[in-house]
Length: 201
Image 1 (tube, rainbow, N blue to C red):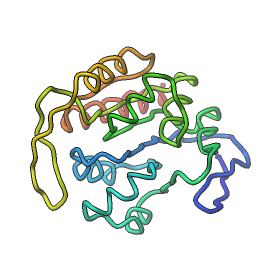
Image 2: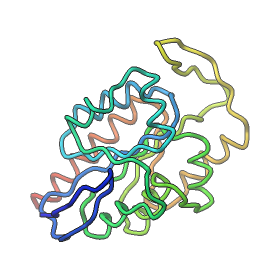
Image 3: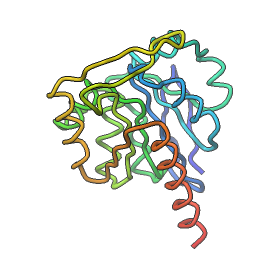
């Protein structure tokens, strides 16, 4: 197994020998159906949750308690410039990377190959290790209904540049784009079935 040592919210890899690969799930600062995304994550096993700096603030706005999430799965925060956890992709620690929800800012950076944060670095390194990524962008249509804190639904109108970035993201190797929570859940479950079948082959 991979033995890891915790230090101020970071992972330090001690011995990268893997027995059961895990799922890496990253949340950015978008509130777009974040409650549904997080509630689904919390039903899964063998998941590590990664939070951008903005995501830490947003999940609190939507009523989630970070300590309660930590009771159910490891949570890693964006606290170091070098993003140490990305090294886990190179040891086979993760079989899949999920980014949901993903802000337009994060999507734009990923499209340009910019990896200057924990989440964008995770996406970049997953691709370089040929680990499949599933991304749920917050900007997927010219007119959208989205969720605000306290259950309020609001309309949002993504710009053309945001929609173009989402389209371009879908062309990046090992990347699959989903456009709804239902599609996200179906895609993740299908991927997990594939991983299990592969491990039993």
